[in-house]
Amino acid sequence: MLPANQTKSRDPAEPKVHPAYLVMDTESVPDGRLLAAVKYTKDNLTPEEAVRRAQAEARELSYTGSDFLPVTFQYPVAVCILRVGADFTLQKVNRLGEPEFQPRQMVEQFWSGLVQTRQVYKDRVKLVTFNGRGFDMPLLEMAAFRYGCNGGDCFQNRNRYKDTHLDLMDWLSNYGAVRMAGGLDVLAKLLGKPGKTSVAGDQVYQLVLDGKIQQINDYCLFDTLDTYFVFLRTRVMVGALTLEKEHQLVLKAKEFVRGHVDQYPALQQYMDNWGEWSPWP
Image 1 (tube, helix red, strand yellow):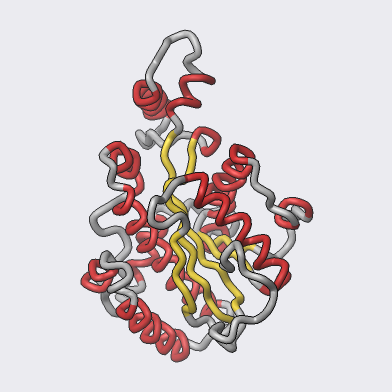
Image 2 (tube, helix red, strand yellow; image 1 turned 90 degrees about the vertical axis):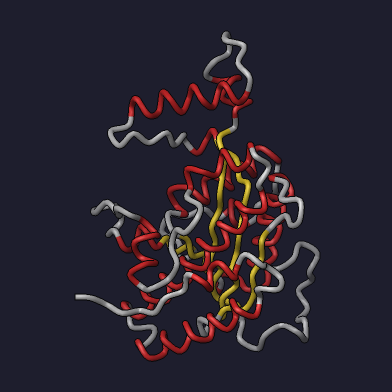
C-alpha cells in the first residue's frame, strides 16, 4: 500500500512490476466501553466486565461454545498488508501503525493508503483476504465510521459484484456452500506452511490486556503470509500459475521472509516452523 504522503509520481526505487494485489489480515478485540454503553446501560460495568459478560452470553448461544462477538462491537489492534506484484512476487511488508500500533493511526493509514493506491493503479490492484468480506473489511469500515476516515472511491463506488476484492474463504467454500472448518490453519498446513503456532485468535484480547501488542502484530503478520501462500495455490487452481512457477515463487518468498528477519525478528519463528509441501495420501 502506498504511504499516505506519497504522490502519483513514480519512485525510482519502486519495482518495475506494478503492484497488483494487497494481501491483508487484521486482528481485533471487543470494545468493552461500547458494550457497556449499548448492552448494559444500567449495570455500571467496567469495560472488562462488559466484555466478560458479553463473551459468556455468546458462549451460551453458540453451539460450538465460541465467545466471538459481532464485528460491530470490535476494533482493530493489528493490520498487516503484503504488497504483491502482477507477477505474484512479494514486494513489501507493511504493518500499519508501527511502532505504537494505535488503532486510530492504523485505520487512518489503511484508508488513506488504499485511496491513494486506487488513484494511482485504479482497479489494477485487488485486495486479497481470508474471510475479509465477512470480517476484516466490515471491521475497517466500522472503524472508518468511528474515526471519520475518508475512503473515497472505496465507498463511493461500492458494488458487490465489482472484482476488486478476492476473499479466499468465500472462493474456496463456494461462497458459503461449505463450512471451511479449520480455516486458514488447515489450508496453510496442507501447503507445509506454519499456520497457527504459539498464538490463536481467541488469545488476542488477553494479550491486549497484558500489553503484548507487539506479539499480536507478529501473529497478524504470520497469518498474512499464510494467506499469501494460500492465494498462490488458488492461482494454480485457476490456471494463472503453473505448479512449477508457484514452487519458484514460494522459494523466492522464503528468501524474502528470511531477508526481513532483522526488521521483524518474530519472522524467525515463522521460518523455524516452515515446512515443505508434501501432499498425502
